[in-house]
Length: 279
Picture 1 (cartoon, rainbow, N blue to C red):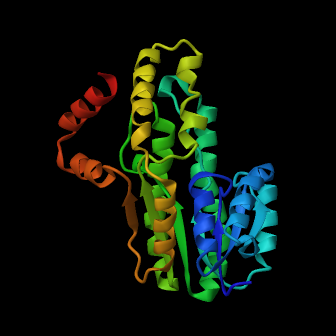
Picture 2: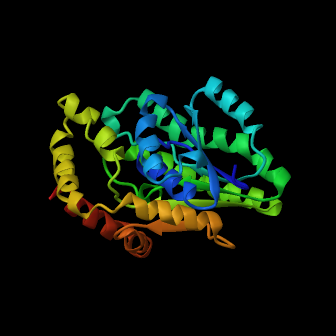
C-alpha cells in the first residue's frame, strides 16, 4: 500500500471515476466508493488498462445510508494515512420548482449536502489526529449562480458552498484544508441521467415550453462540453499543492459568468439569463 491514501466518493462514473484514475497514477492509494457496486466494472477496466488496479480499493457506500456509513467508518480503521477526501457523490434533480415535490428536494439535499457532511464527519477525526489532510468538495457553477429548472440542484450546491466555507475555518487550525471545485458544463452523465428526465415534461406542466427551450439549448451546447479529465487533474493538483485556495473554478465561461453576475445589477443579469434561455 502506498504511503498516502485518498478517498473518492461517487467513483463509478464521471468526475469520480476520472479522479480515481488520476490519483491512482499519482502517489496515492485510492479508496474508491460507489453507491451501486454493480457499476464497478467500468472503473476496474480503466484501472487494468493503466496497470493501476493494485492501487485502488473499492467499497460500497451510499452516502445516505446509515448502514453503509457505519461499515465505511469501520473499514477506515484499516488505513493509516488518509490525506485526501474527495466528496464527489451527487446528482442533479431537474424541474421547475412548482413541479418538483418536497420529497425530491429532500432527496437532493440528502445526497448533495447531508451525504457530504456524513462522510466528512467520518474522516475528520482521522485527519485531525494526523494534523494534516485535504477535504475536496465537488461544487458547481450552480453553487455560484442559480438557473431556472435547477432550483433543487442549485440550492444544494449553494448550501455546500456555505458548509465548506465554515468547515475550512473550523479545520484550518488542525492543519486540514477544505477546498471547493466549481466546474461548469462537462461531458459527464449527471445531466443525461437527471436533467433530461424532469417532472415538468412528464406532467404536462405549464412550464413545458420553457423546459423544452432550455433542453434545446443544452443539446446545442453539447459540442462545447469540457473533458472531465481536466477536472480530475485539477482535483489532483488541489490535493497536492502547498497552501491551496478555497475555490477553484474550472470550465468554459465559469469565471467570467461569476464575475459578470457579481458586477452587474441583478435586473440586468436577469434580462441576460432570461433572453439566453427562453428566446
